[in-house]
Image 1 (cartoon, rainbow, N blue to C red):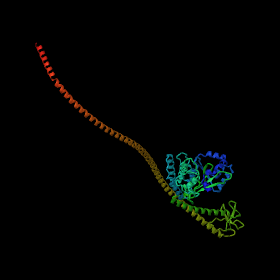
Image 2: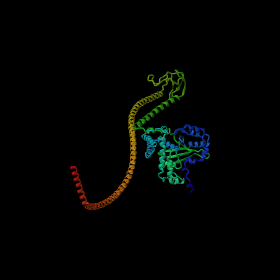
Image 3: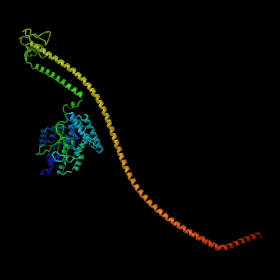
Image 4: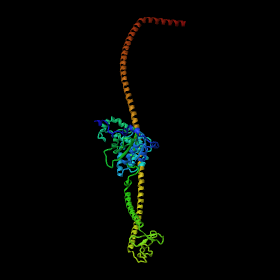
Length: 565
């Protein structure tokens, strides 16, 4: 129970494991400051362990740990930029270099395809992140076609850019997303045999918050990241911890993904207090033997096989000639001098003659006096014979004939080799022409594919723009519909109010009509009363009116009389 309360040592982050002791004992030499000041890129060149040993030359404990690195077959290391992403940068550098250094073209293709499948499932929102991820996809697809990064140096040179859309940060973001995606299953079993959820509970870490920390750029790797790294990338991860402490030895933590065998890449990283670098068990600048031959086309492989067989024959003939020359030079020297160059002559094997190596002059070595000079394998002189002792060397004649046959065979083989070389040269020229034509065709196809890719990207951008415009139009239409709905509700309210007003107006009109009818009835009654009163009034004044009328008539007649008068 007490063991389960604390996290296992392999579950802790190496930075946590190094602790406070490293800060006090890990004092760098002046070389460290100079190297750090000179290094400004994302990834430095390949360096041997001796340069790492010189980083802290005055720390004997660190020197001892460097010796242990040599004992564990680590041959070199590579600096990485310390911006909070150094673990993921060192990890992905080692991972891609393992793909480039695959021992066969088939294994390289298999690893590239697996990595490309994982990259194609990722999504990003920021335009610079999308641009960097598309550039990374393009490079990995080139690698899948047998192009792209042909060596570790080319890969490291492509990481020099430090912009937000660089390949370096695209690799870092890809590693963070792959590791964070592995956390979606909290019941996954880690290397200690316990689930991810249980390990997180033991170290008091909430998985959603921890996932956000992994995805945050500039945040260093902590706690369970190493276990998740091996599972996410399908690799074996080795973490070398160098703290330079007095009592500590080199600690190498190994995290496995469950896969084994030569197909599983082994990626190594090294941690010193507060910083990760890449470390190697194999020199990344040395490609495996026959990697390019295995990746070559079938006609080229056949040509190389024939050329290798002929080169072996030529090497055998050259070795035979060299052996013959060494046998000639190692012959026993005689006491006779050459009559031409006055140098000591050599005794010929299985013969009584002596010969000058320089002038090829032969004499009898048994006579006390000099015999007649004889030519080598001369048909004119016949069998070599001494003029004084009449000693005939039949054995020498057979040896000369045998040597002549060997020379004839060598000349025939040389001529055959020359003809085969010329034939091979013509075949190579034809194959090179065919390859050049195929290369041109491939270049045209690649250009067409690149143009199609660019067209597709432009079309995709246009479609994204149209989608954005449609989304904006849909949002505007939604706003307009909301406004229309509010206006409709207002119109309905107004219509209800108008209906109420109409009803009130109708009721008021009816009341007015009734009042008007009443008033009209009253007016009619008043009119009738007035007419009756008028009639009654007219009846009373009729005699007065007739008297007045008569008076007027009399006045008029009186006036007329006056005028007449």
